[in-house]
Image 1 (cartoon, helix red, strand yellow):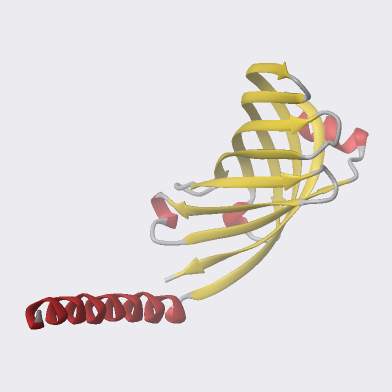
Image 2: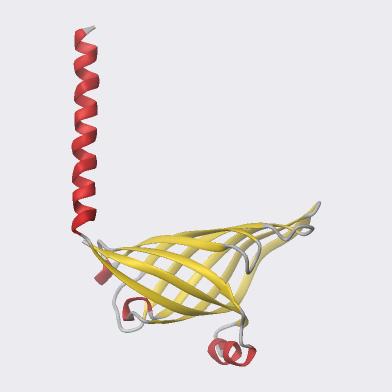
Length: 176
């Protein structure tokens, strides 16, 4: 029985040491805040269907133009989304992936995002990691829908895809 308690104690101590190391690394990280205006350009959808009152969308690809206060997130953002939206209430669950390719950098931000709510009311949260020159960095985002400006949206999406909307992204990058 004593051996069992010693094993549990060793596991708990190891867990605290690991947690302490991770928290120390985060405490040493530098936070770089940014803001983005994102112009949403629809490309193609794999599949969609209605089942009862729910619209299901799968594999909806967008290539969005991101204009940012930080060069590290200023460029194109390719997203893929899956959605389930209640047609009676407008409430939906949308989730997907993103890959931001900042202009002039040999690296990307790769991550996932999720939105729950109704368009214009809720917001999406995203988290990702850097590749290439961004290796070791983490990115965190909140995405809010805003009123689109049809002329600006059309100009920003010209040659990319169908203008669909505009979003504001507030976020930060953690640099170890």
